[in-house]
Amino acid sequence: MSEDRPAATLTLGVVGLGRMGAGIRDRLRRAGHTVTGYDTRAEVSDAPSLAAMVAALPAPRVAWLMVPAGQVTEAAVHDVAALFSPGDVVVDGGNSWYRDSLRRGQELAARGVHFLDVGTSGGIWGLEEGFCLMAGGPREAFDLVEPVFVSLAPPGGYAYLGPSGAGHFAKMVHNGIEYGMLQAYAEGFDLLQAATEYDYDLRQIASLWNKGSVVRSWLLQLAEAALGKDPRLDQLAGYVQDSGEGRWTVLEGVERGVNVQVLAQALFARFTSRDEKAFAMRLIAALRNEFGGHPVRPA
Image (cartoon, rainbow, N blue to C red; front, side, top):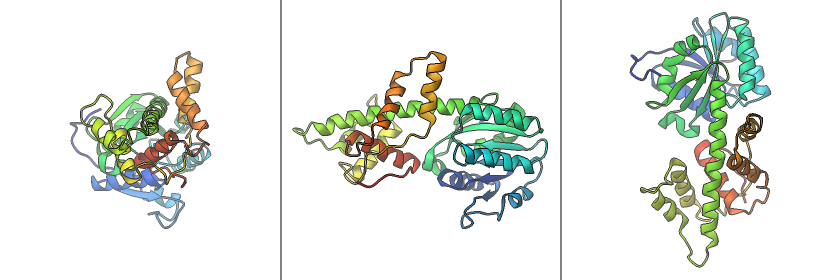
């Protein structure tokens, strides 16, 4: 990490212009980088095709992928790499499984193309507040792309963590911890709202706890905002999706013999969120919408 390095700009492509991809493109442009975005939705895409986006990039080319994990990422990595040359860099900023990233790094390396797996946190707030970036892959590729990390992250908000897979492994654990934190807040506020004899103002308590208490946090600030909009979250269903990262975290704990019981219980609680009237699950749904723009179901 080199926060004091001189400012530099790059020309790069961003593939996937959803909530976070568009934020990444726009934040980079604000910092002076030249960015061509490509998305399958023509109305938001800067380039008419992936090939056109790649053609607009100077060598060594850099493409930042911000697409859903799984087959969509698999296809995007393959399609971009097929258009790239040795020395070019493919960056996967999505929530991919670290073992897939390790494999993709090896496959692209055989063709001379660099692959960086970059765990990206910040949600829809990243455009204004900056993204936290956890990078894995070849060090020379990280050094080439580092001006992008400098522009995307707040001070101290990015790091090179090691070889292929290191970035997405760290992001996987990050999201597992997120599950546990969300569940703790949800259960606590569920208990508060159940104490009907006190008729608590839950937004007031969230605001109070954010003023110097040991449980203050950005998530609690978002809880305050969500409860200010809908004090009892009556407009939301308590259906909470799990993105896959929590499952991977728990499975890694099992395989490595590490006790992750809090994270596992938070994951299992999401499985039981089909009780859409549960207040705790409605709060988690509201918080995920606040920080990540994740869709919610109306009550």
